[in-house]
Length: 127
Picture (tube, rainbow, N blue to C red):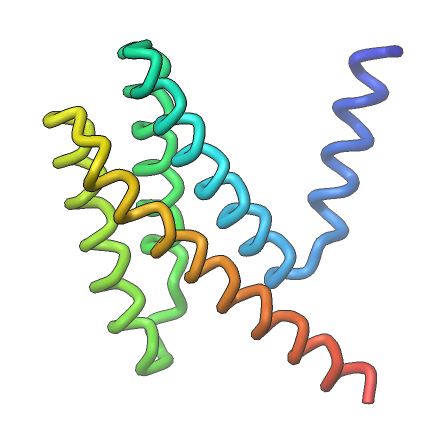
């Protein structure tokens, strides 16, 4: 397969996504990377563990930076993102499996909440 063709396809797919779909894509990646971090921690693969947590932190920071601050819920989300960033840093430094296992369901719950909101929003647009 032509690599440029695949890259063009990927770029077109991303460009045609709604903001809600892009948000879900980021959350899916966040959950995936936290799972990869957990697997790497089990194998004591420290470079992979740290890279996965660094990517999680980058995603959370991006989500925080792109919040639309005109809505009251943005302040609550920003505090939640600050908490996630803090916990990810603690987990990385302490290589703490217990804390990672505690944080991962929170990340998945946030993703699921946004997935439900996106689904409800798309149904309202279609009605």
